[in-house]
Image (spheres, rainbow, N blue to C red):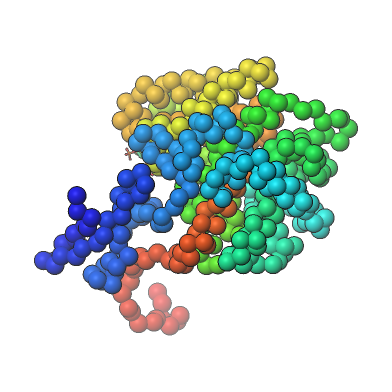
Length: 428
Ligand code: ACO
C-alpha cells in the first residue's frame, strides 16, 4: 500500500504522506497543503479531522471499543479504582502500590481550598447553575495559585496536577452543598479518594457519616467511565486553550464550559429532564418516539446517538448493568427507570434509530444512577466534569509536552466583498 495520498486539482498532482497509528488508523498528513496548493480543507464539526497524534485513549466507534492507554474500559471499570485510572491516563502506566500511595499522599497534602474562595461561592445565587459556578470557581483558583506551570519541569507539572486533583473535588462538593443549603465542609484525608469525595458531598452536619460501599463503588465506576474520551468537544477545548500556553486551571475552566452544553456533557441532565417530562405526561413513550422522528419537531431523544459510536457505546453497557445493580442494592424502584427501559426497547427496534445507528450513550443511564445516589439533576454534568478531570489533565499535559503549535483553524470566507463605507446619515 502506498504511504502517500495524491490530490489532483486542475491537472496538478500533489502528494501527502499517510500516517498510521498503532491501531492501524490512517490519516493524510496535510500540514503542507496550504503552502503547496493555496487551499485549505473545509470540515465543519471536524468530523474528518485529526487534530493531534495522541497516545492516551483509543476508541473505535464502529466496533464499540474504548481503551485508556491500551487497557479496555471494561477491565478498568471492573478491576481498577478511579485514582489508579487517573494516574494511568496522566502518566501513561498503571501505578504500583508505592507510586499510588505517594500520588494519593501528594494530593491529600493539597486538599485545602483557600477560605476566601467561600466568599466567591457566597456571591452566587443559590439558583445559579452548578456548571457555571464550577467553571468560575476553577478560574478563581488561578488567583489563589498564581504561579504558572513551567512545562519543561516535570516537578512543576506534577505539582500543578496534584493540586487540581486535590482541590477540584472540594469545589464540586461545595457546589453541591451550596445548592442543598449545607455547610461547606472539607473531607477526611484518612479516606480513599472517591470515598472522601462522597463524604464531602453528602455528610450532614448533624449525623455521623456512614460508609456505604455500594454508593462509593457506583460513584467510582461512573468516574472511571467518564475519565477520558479522546478529542471530544471539551477535551479539544482544553487542548486549544492550553495551546496558547494559558495555564492548566484556565484551560480546565474552559473545558468545563464546553462540557456544559446539552449536546455534550449536559446531555445527562437533559436525559433525566426528558424522562421526567415523559413520566409526567403519562409515560407515553410512543408519543415521544414519534416526536424524535418528526423532522419538523426539534425534539431529540436525549441520550441517544453519538458522534463517534455508530454501533454501541461500550460505557453504556457497563453503566446499564451498574444502574440495575445500584437500584437493586439500594432498594430503589424508580418509575423513571421504567420510562427509560421502554424508550430504549422501542428505539432499539425502530428502523429510524436502527438505520441511523442511534444507540443509547453513556448519559442515558448515568443520570439514573446519579439520581439514585441523591445527586440533584442540575449537578449531573458537574459529576461528569469530576470524572473527566484526569482526561483533560492528561490531554493538556501531552499537548504541552509534545510542544504542539497554537490551535488556530482556517476558514472559507463567505461574507461581503470589499465595499465602501456608508456614513450614518446616508444609510436607509
Ligand atoms: N434523536 C433523534 N434523531 C437523532 C438523534 C436523537 N438523539 N441523534 C441523531 N439523530 C438523527 C439526526 O436527526 C440525523 O438524521 P438525518 O440523517 O435524517 O438528518 C441523524 O440522526 C444523524 O445525526 P447527526 O446530528 O448528524 O449526528 P452527529 O454525529 O452530528 O450528532 C449527537 C451526535 C450530537 C450526539 C446527536 O446524536 C444528538 O444530538 N444526540 C442527543 C444528545 C446526546 O445524547 N448527547 C450526548 C452525547 S454523548 C456525550 O457527550 C458524553
